[in-house]
Length: 119
Image 1: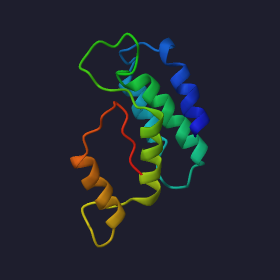
Image 2: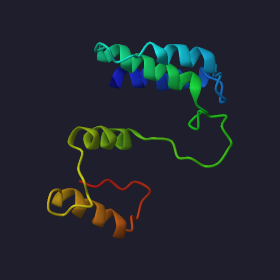
Image 3: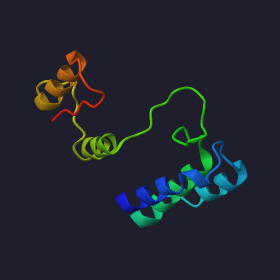
Image 4: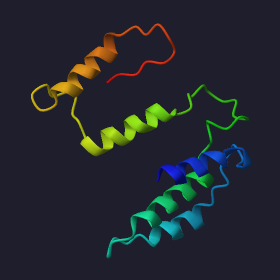
């Protein structure tokens, strides 16, 4: 998946900023997901990447001048994958004490640089 996401990011400059979304085509593609039988993960990842390439405003595009939406960075993508794998619940100190402590630290930290990595 990391390679596929890197390849998609490399294609970013070729995409239009505004989506070329076709509602009927998207509905037909989604209809093929009937959940009657499992689908290969690679097929699902390819589908999701393709739909997002053509179905969202690309806020990380160099010609996007809308509201400021910071681009995802590699460390934030890593953090998303880690959290997705462990599913910590930082609101519960009894079941996720490390996640709760990290969240509290982030809430009170005053970084001296633009980059602040926790953990």
